[in-house]
Length: 465
Image 1: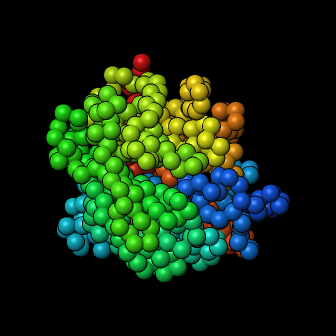
Image 2: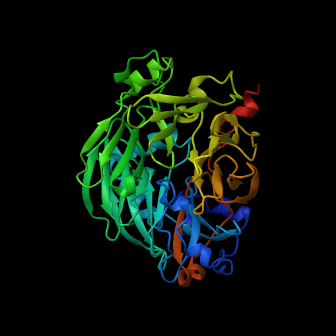
Image 3: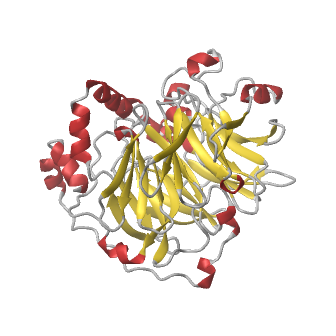
């Protein structure tokens, strides 16, 4: 089970043996709840990019889930100490899936293409993940396997599996009541809506090319959704006609009927703001506390923009330092100059990941906008999530295999924790206390990297200012 089993399937057991095996990782002693304040609903929990209910379910405790995309694990952190609680295998069916892919030439071709074009030479085993509100399940999108699975946090076995349309699954979002999860089928051009308890599809809505991020807004009544087009190819250039880059959309969807209520004309909005050479591919998004302003990153833009929800006009353009001005566009990681943004619950600061420049920073909103000190906490920061109480933002350093928590108040890194290979998505969640000691693997090994360090992981070192 876990990493050793996958390596054995690849004929690499001898390499693992040479590297030495570790004892099965044991969960740390369970940390008690921090008190009554932990059971209240903070302002951050009312925001669309914070996860889960304000009240912890009976028998559950809060944890932070980190998806280790290339390793095929999820690391659980304690939100109070930021120490590792456990690590779980998110591909316990690895051999079965690999046999299935090997016997299907069409799937095998795309599996290898995903490895080379998007995975930087690695398979993608966990893009996104959310726990159920009762802490009994974790739901995971697995890009290379083109599916979504729910894994029991008690048995560590797959409870249900849903193959998505097309050949790759991507970002997800969970409704505030915890009953539904939406998942982007990035080559199927649709977003599936699944029931968390059993994985049944209860609907879907149309997207553009390469559906990407979704956020439940308006208390779960609507979904803000964006698609990004062909970011895995060289076609996302302002000088190339839009149809060749894929249909890229920013839209609001009715969460009940799944009808598209509005699509924003980003090309017009950017052109009116003088950003004619800026891509319309919307990357990570966050919202103002009143949800009337959408802040989002765009392909190749070192910074972000703000869009007025009612008028559809760009109201703010915030440019941030570009520490790799000579880096050619094809060397950008999936066109992501910046990939990760989250506003604090008061609407005063935005935590931003400067992906290609290897920094995180805090942007102070108000009468005079500006950014704080650039935090060089690791390589290739690739996601930002606010903590459940709104005090911190979590930043994954995918090139360094670490996650940091940064104080919104001080704009400093409070602590950094090592996780698995290539962490991407970080989500707030829950686990039943009784399950914690049973988490982990039946066997484990020192994580073994199957590919050399890539140019995308060290851009600021290879192309210094």
